[in-house]
Length: 153
Image (cartoon, rainbow, N blue to C red; front, side, top):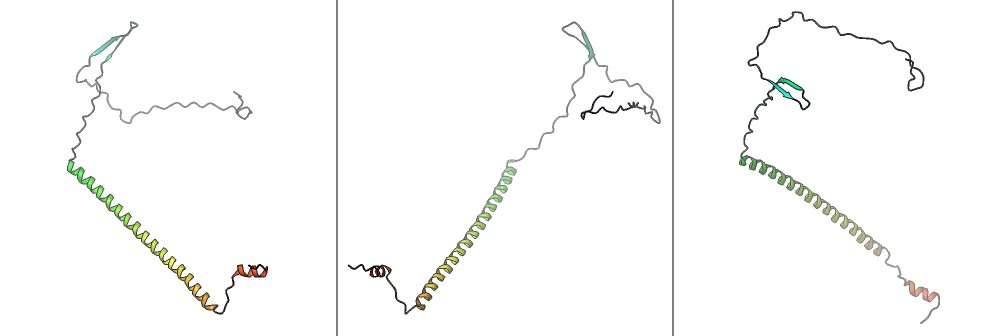
């Protein structure tokens, strides 16, 4: 009884409790009435290959309820349903296409405006920088370097 547990220490002995079910008695016992079957089933006997005989009642297989026929769906109803689904798909596709074209147009418009602002800013800088230095002299760096190093042709 003192077998080691999985941790290596012997287990404490436990008391064994036995439970016996208490039968229930009905408050008003119903009288047992013999019921006669509608017909006495036939007894069948089968001889097994080893010579034993098995006897029993033949049981009829349970009859399932017949399946109710599904109502036929008319071809016109199917065509109308499929046409409705197709129409909704086309409407959804056109809505998405319209939304895409609108977004693309807005993007192109913004890009054109951005290009115009950048180009206009560049033009303004060129005009203002040219008008601000009217008395300046443009120097040809190549000729200046050659003259400084005394290279003459």
